[in-house]
Structures are given as structure tokens and as C-alpha cells.
Image (cartoon, rainbow, N blue to C red):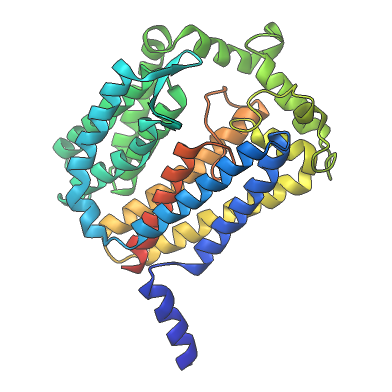
Length: 362
């Protein structure tokens, strides 16, 4: 009994949840295997991916050591810095593939909209936590402004996928804070009424084309529909056991676009089949369940709401990416969490995991 208590105290002292970490390590190991195949066995890409993982783990460990009250105190400053960085990138950011989303610092490319996925819900949770639960209508209105300002700045880059994730993360905070179902219904109606405005005035032509391809991708098989057609071919051809690691035709022959990033799930499904898909879904499910269990155990409202929000946003990440590459959602450019190649998204995810363990262990 004393040994067990000593082991628990060791994990508590270093502010790590061992089960949560084990699942994260399993997913990161999975990502290395899939990236090696999706990159065409490119050593440079693998070195970058491993570097991203180590940087992400280091950031996660550092953040897990910081007491949660410091996040609350810094939230307003972090939010202001986030808004400023989004404004600067909208004006002076690096343009790639028709979008102005990145800062360039030599070989380092950073996407400031990624940090908004954590900072926006953190700011909303901090603001709401200073009010009674459920929050009053006045504070809900202010929270909406806090959410929509960064969302609009991201949407005009344009980056509709990230904008959707930011607004989702903010709205989850309000939902978990206990707002009434009548208000939730009213917000749903407002969103439906907002869709025509978004279609005609916010979404660009290529984004509208992607939505149209959802209903009939064969309308433009070599243009807007090419991504989803090739992705569905890859997923469908995998069968139960797949074609074998490194033996996927769609990925290895480069028919599948963005196979290292947004469409890496298609590579996994083609090469490892249904067995590989189920295995990674089980890992994701375990990570989400563990996150929700942690949220339930946290005694204070701020911590409980923040951890539950980060966990639910992870679920939305997974659902949107897999739905996108499977043809049941429009292609919006959302990477597969922890698996896809990309430093900004991975580091922000790991920072979120560090925050979860910080709130839990402190």
C-alpha cells in the first residue's frame, strides 16, 4: 500500500497523468509509422516530424508544471496578443496556396490561428468563471464578442476549418457553463440564419466549390472534386487488413493529395485497412474518455469546464478530419490530431494536453 501511494505521489509531483501520457505516446508512435509511409520514406520529413514531437512534448511538460491560476491571470494578456498577431498575419503574413496564414521566421513557419484554439476558450472560461453559474445574459453577450472577433480574423485569411474549430471551442465553454436550452435553441436558429450571409459574403469561391463537391464530387473530378475522389478510392481499397504498410497505391504513386497532412487518414485506411482504422479510433476513444474522467474529478468549475472543453474540441478535430476525408463533410483543411504532419497544430495540441494535466494534478 505504501509503495502504491509513493508511486502516485511521484506522478503527482511531476504533474503527469500516466494513463493520459501512455495514450498520447501510442498515438505519436502511430504517427511516426504512418508519416514514414505517407512521406515516401523521406528522411528530412521524418526528422522534422520527430523534432516536432520532441518540441511538443517539452512544451506539454513545461505547461503541466504551471499552476492553473496563472493561466487565469494571464488569459486577458494572451487574448490581446492573440488578436494582435491575427491582425498582423492578415496584413503581413506569408501567403501559401492562396491563403495568408503564416509567420515566417527563417525555417520556422508558425500559424497564429492555431494558438487561438486554446487562448479563446481560456479567455471565455476565465471571464465566465468570474460570474455566477449559469452566466447572466450580459456576460454571455460579451463572451460571444470575445469568440467572434478572432473567428472573423481567421475566416478572412481564409481558413474556414480553423475558424469553425475556434468558434466550437468557445461555444463549448458556454454550453458547459450551463446556459439554458432555450438560449441554445436561439443560437442554433441564429446560426442557420447566418449561413446565407456566410455563403455569399465570407466564403471564397474555392470554399463554395468544396461544399458543392460534397453532394457530387464527379462534377469536377480533376479539379475541386479530385481530393475527395482519390481519398474515397484509397479508403475503400484498403479492405479489412489493408494493402500493407508502404504498399498503398494511391499514396505511394502520389495520386492522393496532401497525404502527409489533411488526408493522412486515407493513407492509414488504405495500407492498414479496417483493422488499422479501428485501432486508431480506439486510441482516440481512450484519450477522450480519460479526458472526460479527469474533467469529472476536478473540484472547481473553471478547471472542470476547461478540461471538458479541450477534450470535446479534440473529438471535433477527429470527427471533422475523418468525416472530411470520407466524403461526409466538406474539405475544410483540418489535420488529424497528433498524426498529421505539421508543427503548429501538434504543438498547440500538446500544449492543451499539458494544460489538462496541470489543472488535474494541481
